[in-house]
Length: 177
Image 1: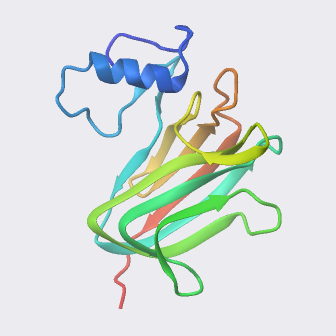
Image 2 (image 1 turned 90 degrees about the vertical axis):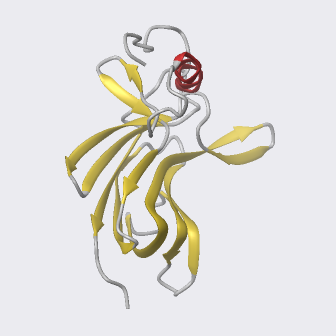
Image 3 (image 1 turned 45 degrees about the vertical axis):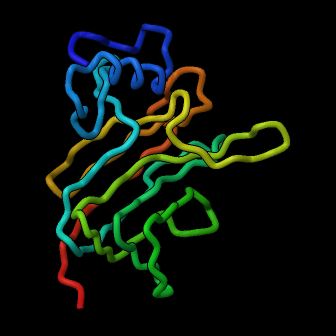
């Protein structure tokens, strides 16, 4: 929203997003909805315009060991896993037992690929996987038209920490056979 820097308002990122949407004079907010947070534009999801089929490479660059974090890639179509299975959403966690990257082919009927950060949080006796709550969000560092770095904060931070989880996405458009 023009003119409002939400960083020092006392609102969480999610509260600020709702406030911004309510204040918007647009019938449909631009996508993705962004808010000013200090010197950064912060959002809770990102959308890539992609070809109908392609390949996406994602790499975890930094993950705070104190919080289990990851990211989702999602399409209206499928992302093909290494075992050949096809899923509409691929959730990738920062986990030392596995590689810090994924590379998958996709097909997107609406030519869009959606991205957001995820995290695990304790709620009573349960460990929940979550997204888009409290101070969850990120700012995007655009390296080129086909490469972006996401600087993410999980919900459970008292104040946003955009260095808690960092990952990169690179798009390689290919023709699938």
